[in-house]
Length: 206
Image (tube, rainbow, N blue to C red; front, side, top):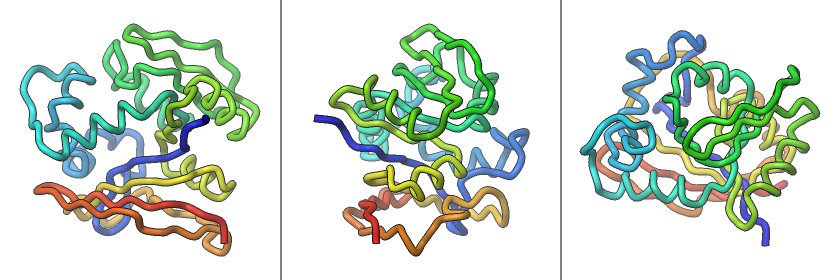
């Protein structure tokens, strides 16, 4: 049986998931937004950030997200930002399908991650990701525009937002451009931790 399609992101209290400019990624605001995840043992191990790290419920959630993911899909903007920021062994360790308008040969990295560049639409990218994932889930890794494209096309089953106590004041909103007349969500779980509040939702068509 095919797995679910989901996304999982950190979001500021005022609704932003990233700064406007890719050059601001890894800047102060973004690091404050992602602070909760960078301190977790499982994430530090994935990004080869050294030993140590927290092992509480936040760490469990990070590990559960990695474990359920059999393949990922991302937009070209996210790939461009990460291509030079990820370590030699990127943290995905699964096939990653990049939605792009620019054909490019696949890019295999150490550690189990291979990037495939798909230039014929999100449905094609998702189909290939489903095949690669088998009975595991497909994660829409981002960015915000790509997530909204999948939501508006009715291709997302559920999502989780880690609501972080940070204010951006501007940037990329998670639901910018959402077709709210067609998309409805149902809250299925809320889990506060010391650093963030994890909000989980199921997605359905109106």
